Length: 354
Ligand SMILES: O=C(O)CCC(=O)C(=O)O
Ligand SMILES: [Fe+2]
Image 1 (cartoon, rainbow, N blue to C red):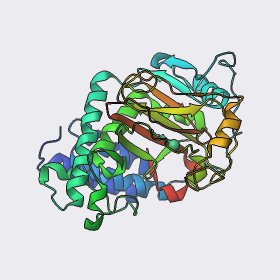
Image 2 (image 1 turned 135 degrees about the vertical axis):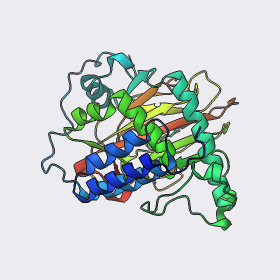
Image 3 (image 1 turned 120 degrees about the horizontal axis):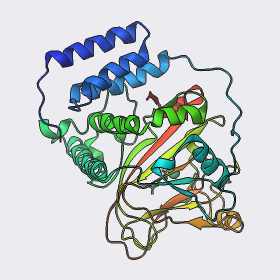
Image 4 (image 1 turned 30 degrees about the horizontal axis):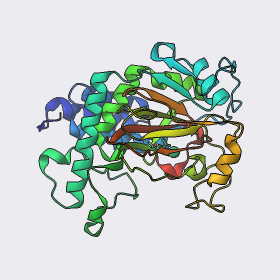
């Protein structure tokens, strides 16, 4: 939980030091100083400033010109496995990640987030959604303000603080992680503890970034009998040359056999964006069932059974949808984190330096 924080000399010092580093062009150090100062307390002022600095840092950084070979080669270690390969966290390395994502369309990592962190993150999502609801109703209290606070550097988007839209927001749905600076800090800290920036730097051949629009906290309610749209995120990320990987973390037991909606995915990655909006598709960004049926003749879909804390990596060519069932009784919490190679990150998603 975040309590009320008075400004302290240490916080002021970190904010000042970070600003000086940013102005001197030492943008990574500007982030590190704030992350270290905010690490123990998740101090809201530090967390808030970090979102701004991450946005600003992206524009100030120089990225490598020549992308490495992409998609990169991999060792095909999962070629003979049926469905998505599964590993434990201890087995996660760049070889496994590439062979899973490029060889099989995804890689399941069991136990990626420890149970105590899962519980904390679920609570944080509840607090963020509640704080957003209150903000939209203009009922924010100092206690809740720290959980939903849009940075001045963040542009537009689905959450307009417009009273006329107040009915749209409840305690479920999805919310940009960047709109919850404290949650953003808690999560980036978790990624660091996991060694994710290093792993992704090996995967991309350069540093990975996040983005405002594709870093999403979710609490999905059961919607028995309904069907979500099949999609590939590459269809709306906006740039054909992007290099990505999404880390989707289940915070609730979900999928096959569970009481909460899972995610249904096609097990392939042939670098194709399928036609959208054709006959039978509900939206211009969704892939019709007829196209999905054609693809799944050779590559079946799966609704993996995830325990809370399990995760799957996949990229923007993966064809997937939320898997609603017929007898779900529980909400499903999840965190969707799309990472991009910094040099080709789509600007319209508002990149955030990690
Ligand atoms: O959480 C879900 O059900 C959908 C997630 C998704 O579409 C994504 O992570 O790209
Ligand atoms: Fe998606």
